[in-house]
Amino acid sequence: MLEAALVAGITSAGGDVTTVGCLPTPGVAYLTLLLGADSGAMISASHNPMADNGIKFFGSNGYKLTDAEEERITALVKSGDPDRPTGVDIGRSRWRDDLVDRYIDHLVATAGTDLTGLRVVVDCANGAASTVGPQVLRRLGCQVTAMHAEPDGTNINDRCGSNHPEVVAAAVIDHGADVGLAHDGDADRLVAVDHRGEIVDGDAILAILARDLHSEQGLQAVVTTVMTNLGFVQAMHELGIEVVQTQVGDRYVLEAMRQGGHPLGGEQSGHLIFTDVATTGDGVLSAVRLLSTLARSGRSLADLATVMRRLPQVLVNVADIDRSRLSGADALWKSVAEEEKALAGNGRVLVRASGTEPLVRIMVEAASEAQARQVAERLAAVAAEELRSH
Image (tube, rainbow, N blue to C red):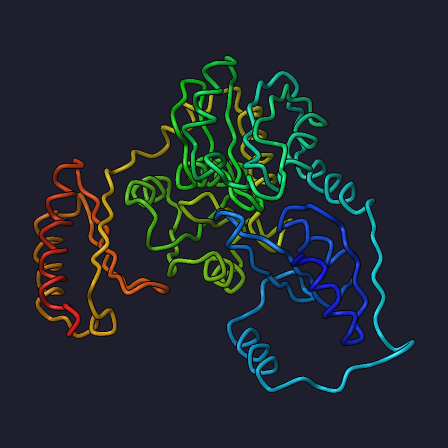
């Protein structure tokens, strides 16, 4: 329904549309550039249930639209219905099923390493990875067991995929696989699992790839967000790699990467970006890069993941408050400073307002989960008292 409506809207305004069917979000970005299109559009609920479907747009350069561009589009939509073309001046729509193969070829070409013999379980989240992920890995030589690769339009992200890595973890044990890979619905994220069923999240994957790039190509810096685990930051400092941190959101990570000329960046959620071959996060590309690193090293994922030691992390959401008053919450910020001083460099506190809900999020990392939870709950009590809605 959404595809039909979007195509009808674009063609009614005089635009031509090429439809490609079910494809990962980064595939749309790649094809936008490949075809020299003016824009790309992806209908997706990302890592959410199908009822949350929306539309992601890419510019002609393959990058997501900026905030300013999105605001301009919103203003144009609200300005009213303009004169539309009629007759021969309306746009045309055509279907091209060959373009999915062009994207698969592109992903295979990024490997540069034979992956023959690797036993891999892939959880496709009943989403876009179903059409691409297993094919790419099989062409590279992997023995692939695909699961949740039968999307029916309603089962996307339903108790599977990167939001539920415990599912692929159990499958890795059952199949005696070397690695498990879990994507989200639109396949721009990756969460991995080692042969023991232990989860390797975006921070750990980023650390593995950063160390490899530092060793092989002299990587100097990596970009991530303020939500990245302190253990990642400590590991990078030990390797001599600078960590550039941004606010939460892959678009901010990419913006910092482009500004600084950094080739690698990502988020704890598993949204990783490689600016040498992509303009946005790509879960299947991330899988290819991770498995290539494993194959070249001859080491297991469990072994490589020891590059960083994760500090226990606790996140508490404080509801029923006025988030707009956060910046002036003197008592809260004083308490944050006191708690961070007590942690003495072996932990940290991050307090931020939710961008979409009337919440303040308090994240604490410490040497133990118990300590992190105690600090988070003390700060949550202060925040609830000072920011209570009136």
